[in-house]
Length: 289
Image (cartoon, rainbow, N blue to C red):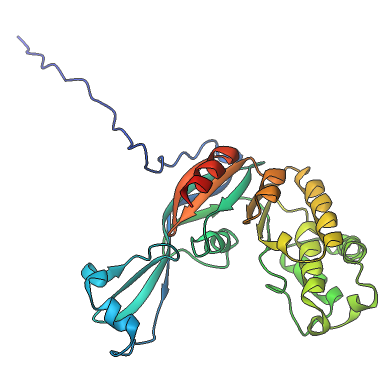
């Protein structure tokens, strides 16, 4: 005779309404970027002077437990005894970005938007967690980042194309395309140190969009340059996105985000506070400030 013991039905765990939903990877071929509990710490090596206002602040209740969390901007500062040792810029960020996603990164200054872009672009390595990127990545973070100031504009195009694996047979085509878009004329063969910030922005944007990337990461570049450049940049970005690129765009300009994005990640203190349709997230963000 056997005795059967009834197993009570299990209740699936619930997620609090305000918590970030669990990571959903989806089909591998559809995933462009997979962020799994990505954290980024930056060390601080400067000892605070005991008489300073910051030291007095950190040695008080605000540093209880070894951390201090700013109320409006920045990540979490860790330390004790009046000495800050590291800052957590990104804190267990998890998200799945699919091919053809058009994602806006929003949040106050210091929320972690630029740092997250740099992790996805391979510039920063996560302190903890995993960032998986599938596809060719092109980045545009500032007017000069990644450009060699001693090289000419043309040499910078060749260098970028080579590093990104562009076939040599296609480099003349890329060179002509960049020259036509930037309208640099003879400056195309002059060292970058002779360029204005606007000229550097034109060159960097042209290179970033000329290589036909699978994933395009942009940080506030539309705020630079004159109105003529901004109109050309919008048209060029639209053409680039027609090739099924994934776009991640950090900007404070809602009009630009509405033109190019359909989904938004709201960053706050190095964490994703909200992930959803652009209009929904923008509304919640505006109501919080």
